[in-house]
Length: 249
Image (tube, rainbow, N blue to C red; front, side):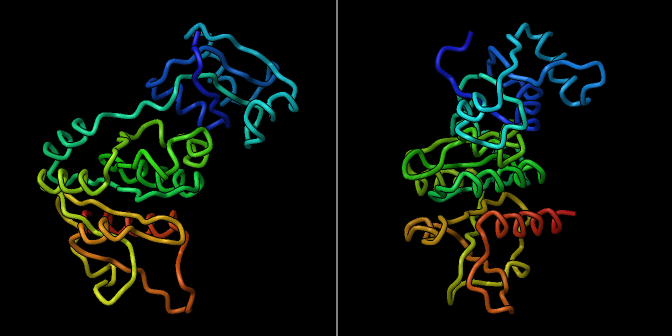
């Protein structure tokens, strides 16, 4: 049984957590079994039995309370906390991959934004993600839900000092592009994203902190001909990550 831990919720996040196999689960909440039940529910039920998990049904009101009224779709998984990787492991991965892509989240606090960025990072095959330990959203069940379970397949490192981590990654051959505006910013399509690259996404509203911005090698901006001041952090990060993917063919 899992002592402590947390409840993941939602069909895709739970299925991806089971598929990734990086956490230790003890029980799962599923809808009542029916002969013609949904294929996805059937797969989770089979996997739960194969892993000898406790399979439970639960009234909606009880499950709402258990998941803090998250969008659970009738499914939840009791499991250990998120399996962060050590920063040294990420440095080794960067050293071994000449096309490494590391995404740095500079004190983002909204789990929806964090989850959205993690979903895209997983989709484009990012090497890993770096997030600070303090004043930032960790990889919570809400963030995993927003990532559609993509977070379960990523290597994510918790670091005390983002700037120190960036400098260590630079020593490993990475160069950093921060998403922001300003006189020193270049259109994102004019930046060469080939080779080992780090993409920095600033906090909602305040953007990148001063020292993080100064540690970047380039500042990239997204054009806003419509006159709108900024994009959601998750959308901006997705645009930049797919530009990186496009340039790499």
